[in-house]
Image (tube, rainbow, N blue to C red; front, side, top):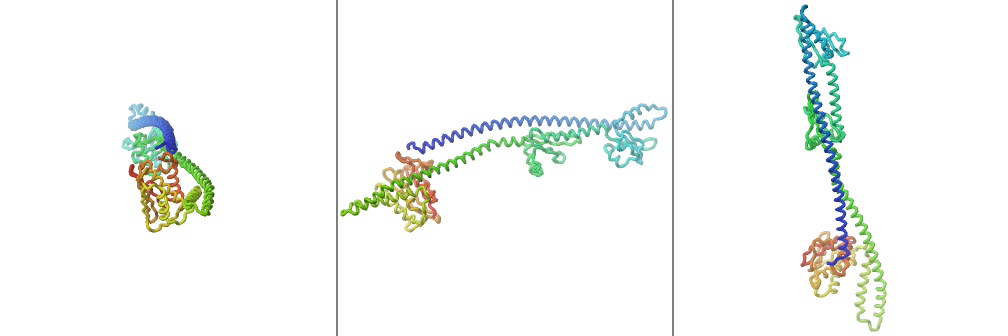
Length: 501
């Protein structure tokens, strides 16, 4: 097979495709490199953030432990204070009570109330401003002093109760600690690294707080469960203890931006593919438009060029017929002139929309094949298998006859010196099928579609336009199909035409 325009164009297409693939590959690799660097950087930031959160959590735990110890010490102080009160009140006149007074006077922060069985207040120390003037231990004071159990004091057969609360300093520090914990939670949820975070109470699996997540979607339990599952798969949760002896779990994962960046190369490939596809469609459309213009211009010019000498030949034939002794070849000349008229008509219809008229396709195939059979060597056997009845379909007989001529000539060329050409016409409810089979050299499967492209030819002096023209007439003008039905190397090829009824 010779190197022709089609093969050169195919090579250029392959070269451009390889170049495009190389450019896309370089771009995608570089994008992957940037995404990987970004992912590594964010992973380090999230690790540092997680370590900071863990350290902060450990500090919170230590503070909680410290406050628990302070609380225990205060309870012991109050118990000691209660005993000091009891001992001071029971002391005799000669007994040294200075130590008890020192213990009592050292209490400057613990609120203490001593009441009798009738809830009358006998003594109150370090009371808040709103409780200083109380004479009876009422419900308001009971709500205030509900942290610790009262201490019973037996004094000269009379029972009194020492009731105490957390010290004022301890209460203030606890408030500060609660504020610190709230700030800690806010810092965790509104983190600078953009990591989505969910904080869950371990006692009842209640969502305490979340950050960098859609507030609307967080109302959906399935979405929350899915997010927690993703976070568990990516990182171990951070466990935090806080003042009220509760535990919380901090779940977190990589930012949404990082997840989007991971999919960016795939999106980039799709964008490149879409762009390439649209560019291919655009260039194909432009190329087809140019081809149509070339076809139309060439065809009309050919028809014009043939028409001028053809008119002259018709005149000369008429003169020959007027001779006393007519020329013996006049009838054959008239037949060839009719043939040239048919060719001129075909070319004039290329480039314009042809008229399809109800035509007997059986008669058209029979007439065309009989004419072609007389024009080829007797070494080529023609087997024409046609129905015995009419099959009328929308057809342009002149153009369709041209298709049969091109396919027949192509089959004869494929058989070289001798062979058999079979033309079989069949039908079903909606289509007419015309199979043209030769006993030539056959085609590889890779060439099944290539042979219909302009410029493809296996002949030394071919232009590669016959099958392309046939495809244009069948598919563009008659809205049918033409394709290689089957082919075997060394045995032959079958081309099928499908026309709608």
